Image (cartoon, rainbow, N blue to C red; front, side):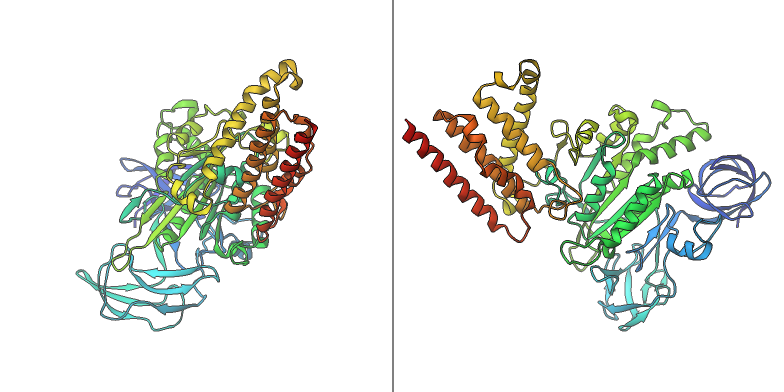
Length: 590
C-alpha cells in the first residue's frame, strides 16, 4: 500500500509527495480524517488529489494512503428508492449515524449489507454463460425486477447456482469456471464511474420518450436514448421542467441528479417524490427512482463526480433492458466545479476560465446516452438511457461556453425564456427558438399513436411563426389595421399558446397529458381555425366567429380527464353543428 504526505492544500485540491506508483484516478484516503479523494494529476512522485470533502483543518505532513482502486460505485439491489450524495454515500443512513450534518471521513456502505433479497434463479448448473447473461432475478421494488447478470469480464461454465431463497448482496449466489479458475459471484458489483459500461451495438433512436408535457411531446420531442438540453436564465423554470420530466417520463427507471442546485430545490424534490404516484401503476414514483443530491453548499469537487455516479447507475439498469431517464440539474454547476479545480491546478484556462477540455468532458457525458443492444448471449435485450441536462448560463446568455459545447452534442434544444416566465407562461419554452432533430426518427412511431399529429404540428408552427411576424405590425398600427385573415391567425396563435402550450404543473388534470389527448386538443384548435377560414371566404365576420361559445369549451379541453376521451368527439360534433348553423344563418341573411 502506497503512503505519502501532504505538501500543499488549495481548497479541495491537495498535493502529496512520495506517491510513486499511484495510478491516475485512483481513490486515496487523505489526512487523519480519512477524507475521500481522487488522483487527477501525476508529476514524478507527486500527485494532485481532488478531495470530495471539506479540507478545513488538515495540514502539511498529514498522511495520504492509496486504496489501489479507481473511484467506483456499488451496484446491486437496493439502489432504487435511495438518496445518495455525489460519491454514492447514502444520506439517510449517514443521518442516522451522524445527525443532520455529514461528519468528515464518515464511511458507510452505499448498499445495505444486512437486508435479505428474495433471489430466484433463471439459469441452471452446467450452462455456458457470457457477460450480461441472466443468473437470477430479485424483485427490488413492486415496479422493477432487478436482474443479477454475469459480470462483464467473466465467461465460462456455471458450476454452482443458489437455489430460490433469501440472500444478502454479499452472499455467494454462483460459481463460474473460467479459463483463469473459478469465479465466485455475489449480487454486489462495483464499477469505475468514469468507465463506460460495454454493450454490443448502439441503435438509432426511433421511439418517443413521452413526458406528458405538450410543448415537448408534440413540438420538440426527445426519444428513448436521446439527449436534450434545457438552457435558461434564473427563474425561467429549468428545475420545474426537469422535475416534471422525472415525474412523468415514459421510462422504467429515473435517475435525478441535483448537481450544485440550491438546497431548498433539492428538498422539494425529496419531499415531493415519495408523494407522487406512477401514472401507469399507481405506486409511488420513488419505487423506480434514484436521487443523487449534491447541493450548492456541499464540497465542490463532489459535483464533478456526481454526474458520473448517476450515469453509471443508469447504465447498470440499461444493461438489464430498461429504459432509463437521467436528469442532470445543472451541468453548469458541474462545469463550474471543473473550472475551480482546473484553476487550482494552474492549468491553462480556456474560454471564460473554463478548462480547455470542457467540450470533450461534456461530450463524454452525453455520449453515454443511447439505445443499445445489451451484452447477452442468450437473448437480444434492448435498453436505453435518455439524458436531459439543464444549463444555467449567467444572465441567460446562450453564447456561454457550457451552452455552446452542449448544443454541439445534444439533438434537442428547449430554449427557456424569462420573458415567458414573467408572463406566467409555463413551461417557458420558446417555440420559435427551440428545436428537435428527432422528428424524422419518430415519424413512424407517432403515426401509430396519433395519425395526423405531425401535420397538425406543422400547421401550428406555421401559425405561430406568422403571429411573430404580425406582432410587429400590431405594435406599430394596432390590431384593427389587420385583415380578417390576419386577425384569425392571431387568435388561433393565442389559442395554441394559452390553451395548448401553457400547462399547469400543479393542476391534477393539466400536469400530465397523454399523446392521444395532445393530438385531440390540437386537432380541435386547428379544426376551428380551418372552419373559420371557410367562414371568412363566405364573408362571415371575425366578430361572429370569435363570439362562438364553443371556443371556451375548446380552451377548457385540457381539463378533460384521460379516461373520458369520448368528450373530444362530442366537442368535434358540437363544433360542426355550430358552424353549420352559422353558415345557415348567414345564408338566410343573404
